[in-house]
Image (tube, rainbow, N blue to C red; front, side, top):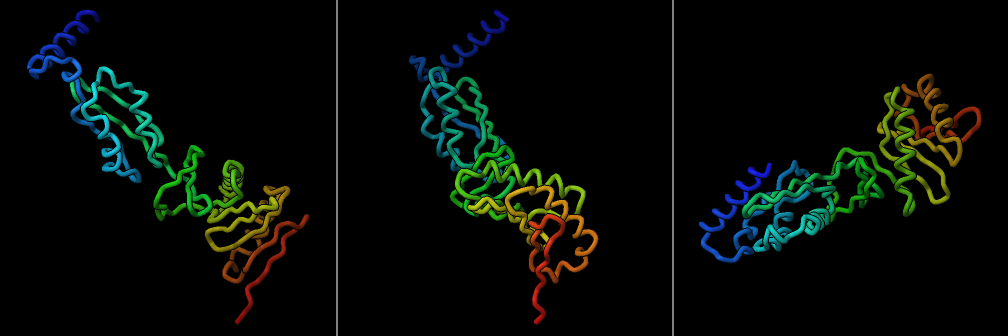
Length: 226
């Protein structure tokens, strides 16, 4: 190990010597920054621009902590790994957040429950979650529980809403809206699923909404025939 370290040090000294500059700070100044990663939402050009401030600084004195603080500032960046590639290159591996759902139309929630606030919200085939301020964790948790209950059915959540008064409303991808109320949410959902499978699945286009807040059944509001 000592021999390898010594050889590495000698190589760096030789490189610096051939660069023809007597200042050690200039020997190892950052001249190029390579940004790597499978980027779908973050702009590689914008990240490169953010890092331009590091050009000319020394690899010897620039801390990895300060470099990472630059990388995690853009909205889509979840984490980074930084490597100093001697003598003059900085390599940055960027990992993006993976969006799971929309949050109140203007934001997204990642698979790790982080709120993403991009300047431009992309159009993605994701469910939409709604709720009062600071309830994203609660809504996301309920979304997960409801999704588990639905896993054995063909129903999928298009929209899940927590109202100010604490009531839940779920809209499925087939257009059916179900009012679940504030209590016994999963029990009411399972009761709706039982009725849906036995009586309603063939008449979806005739249903306006369903109220599952009753203790022993559901109330169906039918579309008016024009």
